[in-house]
Length: 222
Image 1 (cartoon, rainbow, N blue to C red):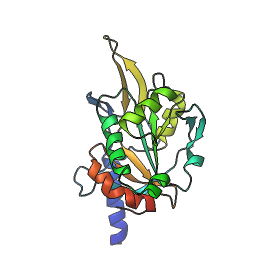
Image 2: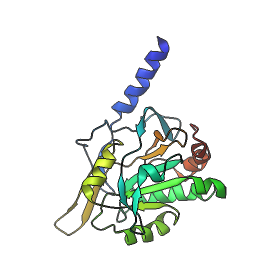
Image 3: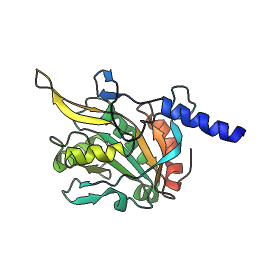
């Protein structure tokens, strides 16, 4: 009975800590829609990663990579440790910081583990983020080994919703500034089950990823 109660409490914590949509560098607004409750680590936690009681199924998402070739996310990353993040290249702060934090940790992995780990950045601003633009940005903000994906917005939005990630079409203000609204979690998928079992918020540091990536590569929980 106690075990069942603990599981329910953990699930409630994840469900209760609903993410908000946020423009990078902007103010938060309440998230709307989505096929699954948006999951985020509860504020009071001792680890960077939250282990999800109900792991996510890898989204059925087919887009274009930085070479303009079709990329079937589910098939291309099958059986491989994978990190997925939704963001955009014109983001002034959170997106480049998240990618650089992951890249710093990635570079400290043994070469064999680097070859196993798939880091996937899916744009939320496909009108501006062409394959060429994504490739150029990832070389600077992350690593040329990272995978950048773009395509039509409805497809990207539907794929994001399968992971509880809420995004909205880009908007332009009166001064011509374009903003992309998106939630900011990184989801780690296990090579053992292909399920998204860990969630990181934008508070995760390079040191956090450095500590956790070796375990993620093995499908272990940090």
